[in-house]
Length: 92
Image (cartoon, rainbow, N blue to C red; front, top):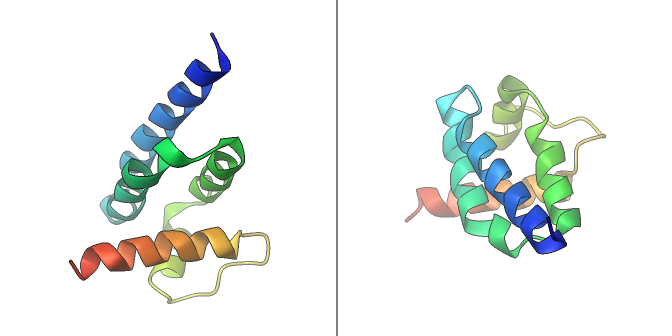
């Protein structure tokens, strides 16, 4: 497997995981984001997405909805990108 095939498979797996989280609300936040952005992401950006997706759905949904502040270990810059993408989709 070449490096190109490796990153391509990783992107595909992350898109699948984004749409099959366990809660429909987070599927609808992370699925469209992953579909729109993973093809342009490099390994470091995929790492950021993977780290965010490793969080549990209930707290992640509260962060996305602005109901709670994420803990310090969460990549807030990347989370802000996901939230902005989700909000832009809601206003279309």
